[in-house]
Amino acid sequence: MTKSPFSSFLISFIVSPIIVLWDFPYLVSSVSPRQFNRLELPSGTYGPETLVFDCNGNGPYTGVSDGRILKWHGSKAGWKNFAVTSPLRTSRLCDGVSEPKFEHVCGRPLGLKFNKESCDLYIADAYFGLLVVGRKGGLARQLASSAEGIPFLFTNALDIDQKTGTVYFTDTSTRYQRWEFGMAMESGDNTGRLMEYDPKTKKVKVLLKKLFFANGVALSKNRSFLLVTETTANRVLRFWLRSKTSDVFAKLDGCPDNIERNPNGEFWVAQNPKLNSLGTSLQTNISALKLDEEGKVLQVLNQEFGSLSDVVEKDDKMWLGSVLESYAGMIL
Image 1: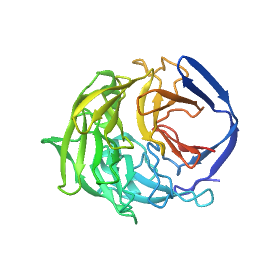
Image 2: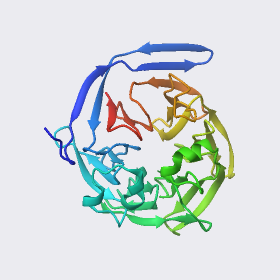
Image 3: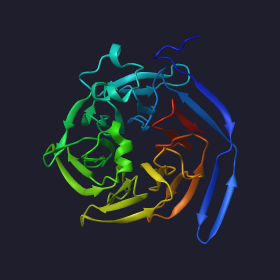
C-alpha cells in the first residue's frame, strides 16, 4: 500500500535504554526495559528537529524537511498540517520534497516554542528568521530577519521567558546558510550569535557573538541565566542575564544540538558523535545528557535512535527529535 503524504502510523516495540546515574566519584548504572514508539512522519519528509507541546499540553508539534510544521493527533490520525513559514511555499512544489535546494522557498522550521499565555507558537526558521503563528496555525508572521544590520542566515533554536514574553534565539552563522552546515562545521566558523527579541518594543538585541555553531538555547527555571550550545566547540555556555557575562557551563565529549529544560529545572542536552571530513563517526556511545543547574551530569540516556537533535521530558515520557530520521521517538 502506498502511504499518502498526510498519512502516518505508530510503530511500537520494546527496547532497553540504558540510564546511567553520575554521582562523582561513583558511577552507578541501571538498565530498565521501556517501550519505544516511532511516530512516523508523512511520506517523503524527515528531520523532526524540535518537539514542543502547546498551552493545553497537546502535541507534539515539529518542523520537518519540506517546510511544514506538523501536529501529532495520536496514533489513529497521525500527523496533520499546522503551519508554514514561507509565503512562497505551495503544497504542489514543496509537500514531500526534502531537497536542501528548495529550503529557501519552502522554508525550514527548526526551533519551536509556545508562549503558554497567548498560545502563540514562536518559530526559528533557518531561512525566514524569527516568526510567530497563532493557535489556529496557518502562515506564520515574520518578526525579525536581522540584528545590528546583519541578516540572519541560519536561525536555529529558541526559548521563551514565559513571564515577560521575551524570546531568546540563536543564529548559527553569519557566513553560512543551513544547506551549507557541513562547511560551517568543518571551517570552524565562529560567527554565531545569541539574541533576544522583545515583543513589546519589537526590537532584537545581540547578547553574545563569536559563537562556534550556535545551536540550542534554554532559559533557567529562575530566569537568571541562558544556556547556549556550541556544536563544534563541544560545550555549553552560560550567559548571565543580569551581569551580561558568560562562562563555560559544561564541556562535552560529543557535538551538542538542542538543549531543553525539564519541569525540575534540569537540562537535557542532545548530542551526536564528532565526525571526520568524510562524515565518518569518530566516536561511539555518545548520548543525551541530563545536567543540573551547575552543569553536573545527572543521567546519560543511551537510546538506539540514530541522529539525535532534541530530548524533551514530559509526563514521565521522553520525546526524541532528529534532523535526519523520518520519525520522532517517544520512550514510555
